[in-house]
Every structure is written in structure tokens, then in C-alpha cells.
Length: 56
Image 1 (cartoon, one colour):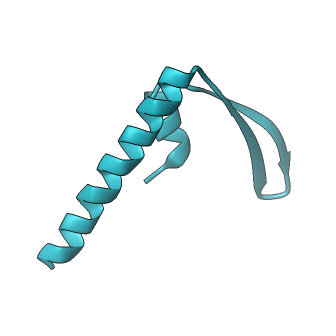
Image 2: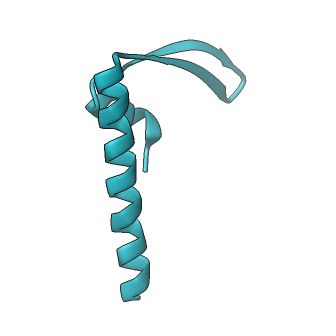
């Protein structure tokens, strides 16, 4: 799961603050509704991943 992509899909703004060597530092901003959407998406993705592991 690409957590920054999930944040964007939830309607949050992701800003690259700095790049030092290979490390990147981001800030994520959004409304309370976007934060709730983000949490819902992470939860759904986690459940899906757990179900795939159980099937194996």
C-alpha cells in the first residue's frame, strides 16, 4: 500500500518538503472529512490484505 497515494485518493494534499539523499520528507494536509476517508481506505486495504493472506 502506497500511503501517500491513499492520502491523495482520500482528498488530502501531499507536499514534498525536502529530499536529503534518498530520503524524502512530506507533509500531508486535509479536512477532517478527508482524514476520515483516509482512515476508512487504510482500514479497507488492511482487511483486504489480511483476507488474501488467509486464502494462501
